[in-house]
Amino acid sequence: MLSRRTLIKRLSTIPLLGGLVGSSMPFSSAVAATAAKRDLFKELGVRTFINAAGTLTYMTGSLMRDETLEAINSSSKDFCMLDELQDKVGEKIAKLVRAESAVVTSGCFSAMTLGLAGILTGMDQKKVEQLPHLEYTGMKSEVIVQKGHNIVYSHALTNTGCKIVQVETVEEVEKAINEKTAMLWFLHIQSDQGKIMHEEWAALGKKHNIPTMIDIAADVPPVENLWKYHDMGFSLVCVSGGKAIRGPQSAGLLMGKKDLIAAARLHMPPRGFNIGRGMKVNKEEILGMYVALEKFISLDQDKVWKEWEAGVAHIDKAVKKVDGITTAISVNPLGNHTPSLKISWDNTKVKTSGQDLQLKLRNGNPSIEVGGSQEDAINVTVWMLKPGQEKIVAKRIVEELSKAAV
Image 1 (cartoon, one colour):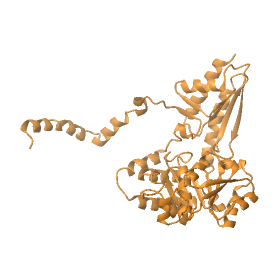
Image 2 (spheres, rainbow, N blue to C red):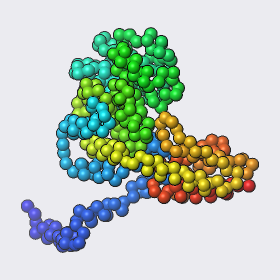
Image 3 (tube, rainbow, N blue to C red):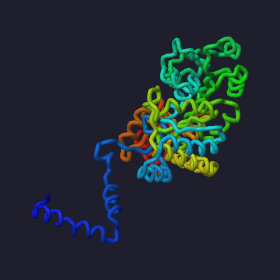
Image 4 (tube, rainbow, N blue to C red):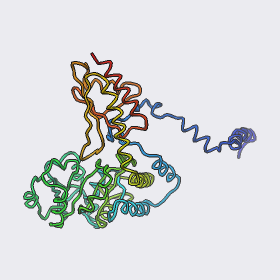
């Protein structure tokens, strides 16, 4: 029971609260406004920077749009059933990307693991619980991959217990296929490193009734890639959500055949006793990913491209005013398909190295990250810049190059 003294002390706080409630600003808004002033990066001593490098994971990918953040924040206020949400969002996403089915995953890497897991087990719960231990289970255990595609990302496939079988030609594919073959995997960003192209790879899968998967993690834009490979005949398509789509960095999409998506979901939370239990996606990320994708597909892609070109052109024009500077604009035909600017210099006229310039930009105010350096050059992109930041990037590069000019 409260003592009189304690009660008086508690009641004494009411006028303060009443003042807030009675003011023109609602109490919740006042709290939000106060909270918004907290700069956690500064508080923790974490450097922030202008991103003239691109959607690199170690630089935390991309920045989410306001619509995505609104979806995340609003959905954090209520509960729902996770499977029901994945069902409904999956239906919407499948229509957007012209696939039979889709599910939001915890990144592209997990989409690959989950997709292959579903292929291995089908809807057999006993098999689901046996992964990644394939021996004596009767499950298939090999994934065929072109040698030039077998880089670090194929680890997502060996997580299931499967082993990678490398090939280089169609003849080698035909020879490698056997009763253990679970899937044919294609890595789009390395497509120029293989002898078998997309259409032929998908056709080989159809010919032998073996599922095919393509990893297009960083390979939008162009936006058409989101449905191009379904139309081409790939069974499963995996993409990152936190790059050009600008969804949550920890989200991705697994899209494709309805039966394979259904099987993959047996390996996903909220279910346990599976290899995907740790690949959790919360309701906020699922809805954020959906809204981000919806927004990305609805964008005027030509307008966005022209804005990127204008940003590159601004930096290009500015740096060429420094004597000894040459530039080259290029577009990667595969991943990160956006305009990029290479800034090079004559070492007899500009006394600096690419690494030194990169460090000066990084350690300057504001801090700027560029997309790598060479002995006498740096690379710059603009597609992750906020409006107007191309002017800051141009100014700082010109300042440093001018200081180094003989």
